[in-house]
Length: 305
Image 1 (cartoon, rainbow, N blue to C red):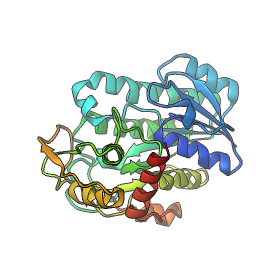
Image 2 (cartoon, rainbow, N blue to C red):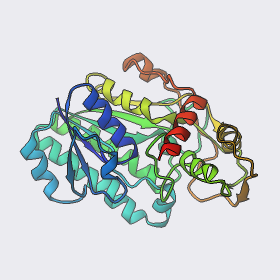
Image 3 (cartoon, rainbow, N blue to C red):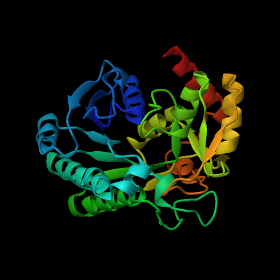
């Protein structure tokens, strides 16, 4: 297949590119390099430096006749979405609509969309949250990710655009930038390896479902031919507190300092774990990477530079 991965030079997107390349597909990556890096991109992939909001996006899709688009490009910082909701909507909603419209008009066979199970459900009513859980996001970011899910369904009804939605939890692993909008694992790893102070926001008892990035890449491969018209949680089904994460990572890295606690930040849920049984039944996906193994691999990659 000829596949376009938006955000393909970014953290998760670059691993998805790697998986598609390894499976023998012709892979293109779209990235404006505001956060993505050229060095992340597989040398066998073709990079198109372009903003998701650029009108030239339509020409790119019309010229290349992609079979599949895996859509990962996004504004992903929850705190920034609270501070700048207009920007969040401009990139995540309007940029995605521009992409979907170009997909429909250029004959793209399928869109795989990276949504957020950690954000669309809000503060969960029960754990682990399955796909039937009410959609109650507590941040503009969560709203924007779900709105695009609805636009995908609309484009499916109106234009026959095929799609599969993957709702990611807190994803971690190699290539995650410890600066800016990075996840907690990358930030902790960077500071621990440098023997610098680690900050925990809130009590540290808030819990997240941490998933190794390679698991997301594998789910995208499976979604090429499965999961038509459905949304699927990816996750371990287990919430790990930030305090527990700190202790495990400190032991793995040899870090001996105590964390510093600061006030919690707005837009964050207290606890989350995702039930991924539907992905197991319909995609044939289940998590195969234990947290400690994934953390060990992440630390090793960061040590290696």
